Image (cartoon, rainbow, N blue to C red; front, side):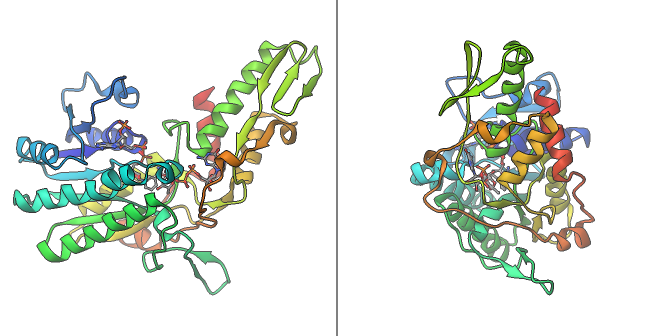
Length: 346
Ligand code: NAP
Ligand code: F7E
């Protein structure tokens, strides 16, 4: 079996490549040209002769056509490439559209034009629900495959367009195309500008600084922006909205669901999540407690710079369909995920 993965240098691309190589696939990873090395997450694959890295950019249709022509024996195509940062999408909306929205159309249309019969996976997102949710018989809010899409950011608009494109290309051209509506998923390979990894990185750096500053000998003091021990200071953790709810799972679990979707006889859309939800404050509390940092109230600054023009307040998925039809279940709860991330950084 041969698979193409776009977004190979990202968190999910690297986990999916690991999974497919374990299953003895030949994997072609697509990475765009960059002035610095972006392949840290796939360094361990460089000597694997079943793995090939090629240059390409999904926002450029001729690049996509070249990739497909050179790999016309491909069985599965996983589109994980995106400008995936929600806050950035407010600052660079057109770029986000070109990659996250139009990029998916480029891939699907190239599959039609080249008459390819490979199976296709699209990385859809819980962000597409925006401010929309349903309420179950216990009065609990949730989102599933039937929940109305009400995007709240340029990123989410682009993901909705790609999501609908998958449905239309499936119906119009009979492409085996599936979308995974994945809720937030994290892990040691998560980028450092996403809130979980930003918190984890700060905690680990702070702990190292505490040890270096000999905090058992000198008392801890604080200024507006810094934590001070004797003559040494450390910047406080600067965050935005701590009240939003997220359904956080482990990326390693979620790439298995991607693969399972593509193996089904009939293409379809599936929500992938844990079914539990926590605020950013909850994440902080669990992480600080696990790291053994007690004075946390004095260590965080709420900085308006990290507030978004529009927020998604509440996400909690219902993945009954993925459980029933794919036999998929998440293995990590939030406490286990936090430990994994902190231990890996330490
Ligand atoms: P990520 O770490 O930000 O990775 C995104 C990948 O896309 C990177 O490899 C990036 O390359 C690549 N990329 C960006 N623009 C490109 C372009 N024009 N052409 C080719 N490649 C390009 O994201 P992730 O967390 O792995 O997420 C994977 C996918 O799932 C994304 O589509 C994301 O939107 C979606 N998703 C993520 C989550 C989540 O919680 N992680 C949830 C739902 C959906 P560079 O290294 O060069 O930047
Ligand atoms: O923000 C709040 C922020 O950037 C989570 C992407 O993978 O998941 C991800 O999108 C929450 C938001 O992820 C900071 O306002 C507070 O409410 O970690 P995040 P996200 O926006 O949920 C979805 C499913 C995707 O599809 C996306 O690709 O945390 N928050 N303070 C902050 N967020 C950040 N980044 N930085 C802060 O300082």
